[in-house]
Length: 473
Image (tube, rainbow, N blue to C red):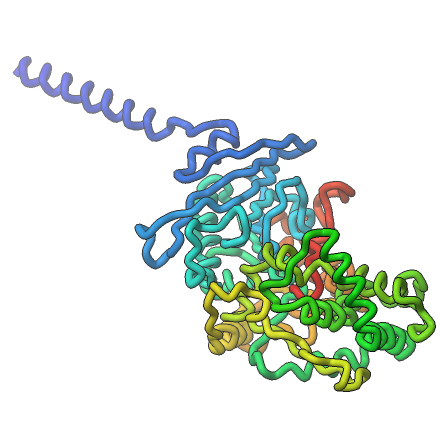
């Protein structure tokens, strides 16, 4: 009997010891420092940490599959940045749809919710490009899967609510991510996101350019654009000298003449995309009498707004991933020029295929945007779209129909491709801010106040739009 009791006591002590050891192991904390926690994510590596008051800012690389359907068939390093505030705060997932900046910045939703920000470079923009590059793996589903993988990896660290956001192509990217992975984010804030549902139907853009701004401004811009084509030969001589001086070539687009016309035809679109109606009165920017202007004045105006360097091989190369996507899935606008006689236009708006090197094959997929558009209209949940009244890209936009829940489309009066929540009329601004705060899961008292939780920082709060070359969303 005593032996039995001693054995039972020993067993109890042993079990207790094992249980205590197990509890201690389970409660063992992970790395305390946020840098160590980030670097504990498999596939994450540090490039640089940059100090910024009130934050920790990290530039990182993350190992991604080239093909998410076949992860074993190669990987590449995707650039990512983390603006760390506090793991107890919401997190905003930002992408421009192009390269990622490696300088600290804060998107509008990040300021509104006073949260962390994870920013991701879009696949195939350098340095986030597989080598060798299999361009067939550059599509909206693969890119959405990049975001999904990053989210799953970092959600273990940033466990509070997540919102996705982006401007222009970044707004498109946030939308596609939501379409393919609708359970990841708690809300989406998409700025000035084009939606080219039917690639061959672009009459909405023609209607926009017939009414935008004032007649006086439209006439002034149209006159300069037409005059540049009337003076094609003397301006091309300036272009030849400019190209020779800077070592520019034109293999991709095909000729200097094609590049010249492409730059000129971007002019009116470029003005409304990035300028405001008040800029039309700037004589140094827009010559008031195009016919009486010098060649240099016409050149300078076109160059300032459109940029003669862009359709060179050197200007196009960084944007090859965008043009590839436009030629395969996204589509691209095509507009008419009723103020210019046909004899002056040789090529018209050239298709994106013209801006992709011939060695890279493209095939357009007409169902890709139709699928996304239908999904947003009928299934959107916690999605907010903001457009600018005077932005050409808003001519074809996303819509939400009866099937959508707690989703909205607003237009900022008088604004361009840089439209944001702050530019909405007061009632819509307050409503949109409150919805963003609610989706982020902050305190109800903060939602009721409907104001950004973080104070404005002139260095950190850069506009949520990077100026891309004209006619790139």
